[in-house]
Length: 440
Image (cartoon, rainbow, N blue to C red):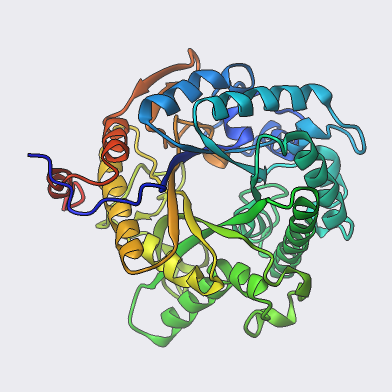
């Protein structure tokens, strides 16, 4: 007999998330294309046609229908919309409108991200979000987007993971422009992005009064590796800077010292958020790197924790379903609806993805039962995609992709997700089957 111990609400959103550069293919006018061309992809791969969405997105919209999804997150590519400064592409608008119309025809509520790590080459040449004019340039882009697509979209994500963009581009050197250990630049870029968010929020609401405008933040659990003051302090510093800086800006409060001395206040950002997107994947263990090498910045992934596939040079991170509840609790004080907008694991053989999917949704359901305003779950991702500096090495898809032939093959986790969506809940036998991570 079918038993579903706790169902999700009828209006819950079930989706997947994608991004323009990782899915469309042929994006040659942004800074990531230049980064790839300079040989910075660890796997040696190139994005190329990616998942061929620019030509054939409709093929994967059919997969969305087969899964029973009612929501989809995509991004539009600024470098397609404005390939050179002040020059806008009508053909890009036409193609995006085709994709959006088809998604709506299939009953998908589409959340559109304006910036998912990529922007035009000309914008990068000006200094990106270090440029004092960046918020105004981004406002113009947001205005163009809402005027082009506002009859098809009301849900907007201004930025995907500004904390990741700033840290990986200016602190860890893994994203363009590849700067290392520039904490002042990291904080300046971050505050510049939050100013741009505020400017975009204003223009989106002015042009479209019914607009629903948020952003997506990446949240990581930082766990002290040892019970000592140095590990605890370093873990707290990571949590403050990476997880809670966005929250501070949106609440209109300064960052804690000493970061407030290096980060410009953004008072215009306070309260300018209609929903929060939470991108939740990992737990990282933190050990003060004194007298020994213990990973970059003391971050560490123990061997005996649940993990997906390893990156080219390092572990990807501990797969940790309880990061869902940690993130929800952290951002609940904003008093805004929350959506898990990314959750997944690199797993070519589907060894651990079903466990993570089931238990992350169990955590999300628990938070809803406790009264938290969580309204949807978007899995990362629908099909395998070009995974930034890891290239095609890491595989996140519910569907496996042969990037050479563009053939899709469903992994078992696709059927598990389809079943959960159809039932609006997790079957008891599914919970029991995936109660423990493989290998435990």
